[in-house]
Image (cartoon, helix red, strand yellow):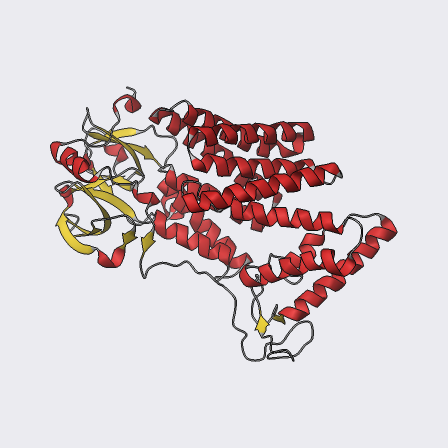
Length: 471
């Protein structure tokens, strides 16, 4: 039996009336919450504890210019604190030493890490400190050394900053789109200038083309999608010319080309499912590659990207298991207040939210817990866009009125003909209207997807410990 053939969202007269009045409710995992429960932070800079001093000048408290002790990396305890002017001075000194070594031996030096990484914990600076150190890096090449080629290094640094901004622009927003087009124009100008003096490495040029393609794809209209495809193809051709070292990068660009082609061709829901599966496979490969290399920082970054796609592809259990591991690793490597740790925590909070439809109202709610031995369910909502949890109400309803939505983890219970599945857990992937069943993909990969009645599924609020289950 092909369970995908009949899978549709619930459709009743009440739902149709609701949709006619309000339009389709947005997929819940894309709604941004505004609540006191948020764990995200805009700054993770640590306050110096008593006795802390600058690891460079060894002075405690502010320096003569009034600059305070700062730290925003992965150092712990009393280590890593410094005055920003001391960090800039140290970066300039190390950069000068590196350049002298280049002149003497011809050895290539990584000038970026000198300014961007903390020499103590070997991790990147963050937030305000990173911004200031980037400025210092540009100043070092532009104004202090004034050596031949320094302007080209500054152009390369500027292009990296422009690409970073471009990745955060939403092309559907007119104001942001206008800014994005200006950035694209500037990037293409930098690319031409660097190519003229043979100062544009193939990986750098391919990355620039891919990021420009990402921007045009976010704009969504057909003209922009065609431009996105052209830039993706240009990036792919450069990667192919460069060689096998960038195999995963080529796979990533190939996936984006297929995704754009599906959009231009008016891709069906099945095409979108195939696209999501391809994205999960690609990011899983990248994550496994980083794990094999033993680079914790890259592993955390790749893991966050994988967990995000797993979440939006309705693999909530797998996403939650992965994030639990990433949080442990990030706390060990970076500390609890680091941006990477906070990203993991914020994403885990979203993954752990259990989205349901209240059958009598056909509106979105968040299920919070069961009461009275599972006969009642406490829910919060209704959910509106943008979500403001403080404006929602918390009510208790009969559990039979609560219907899980795609991506909701559930547990089987009360099955008679398939009693061996009772207690097994999985994610709801679709609702099969013609059979009045939910399609559930089990965490146990050895079991096939199951079509089950609503009455045989319970929303799973807390995942069982896999170690206890295996024992």
